[in-house]
Amino acid sequence: MQTAVKIWPRKIGKIDNMIYGHFTEHLGRCIYDGIYNEKSPKSDSRGFRRDVMDAVKNIKCPILRWPGGNFVSAYHWQDGIGPLEKRPQLLNYIWGGVESNRFGTDEFIEYCREIDAEPYLAVSLGTATLDEAMAWLEYCNLDTPTKFARMRRENGHPEPYHVKYWGIGNEVYGPWQVGHCSAAEYAEKLRQYTQFMKGVDPSIKVIAVGADNPDWDMTVLKHAGHLIDYISIHQYHGCDDYFGTVASVYYCEQRLKLLEGLIKHPSGSRKDLL
Image (cartoon, rainbow, N blue to C red; front, side, top):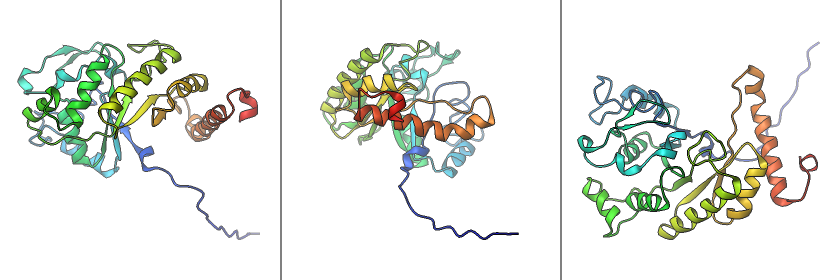
């Protein structure tokens, strides 16, 4: 016997398009010979691989994060600007090999414009400094007679890029990361970076490093939540089996509910808050 079931769909919420974003970093062939290869017959005059660019356009990537990933924690943005032949070749001691720096800030912004994606820059909390982050923000977003804004114009880009999204650090909760620190230490760095960067450009949106650990997230939010705009919930799923992939959505939902509960009721137990 067959039974007919009638379904009345109803809208219960709206998914922000930004959830479908991606990131790229200087790992393996991700950048060089991935999205960028000056010598490939598949590339355009700028060095962008046309076949890869077409694929990225096809998936309609709304936002793209760069330069990492782990790579960002040892990255100095000034190595990747100016004439290509003058950019230093350096050891990529995060992922191995030699970093040519031929793909840098200006190339990344141009790539984002080409694929119609919002650029999302991550600043280093490893070997870099607050001064470097401030200078990078000035280079990208300001139209002032000051050093780094003038540097952008001299490099052939008269108009500010108006980069909206800025991430402070990457996975600093992990001992594998250059600049690894505790949640309390990170929260204080985050507070300082956010305060001074928003002082330079109040229009930016700052993204904090989140972990697969509600206690870490809660510490960060308690100390700097009033200044930041987003926190990235770092969770890796589906690496081992099919069921891990299928259940990952439910797992993320539970983690977010727990974090929401901790924010509203800091003294509550995890069991009661889920």
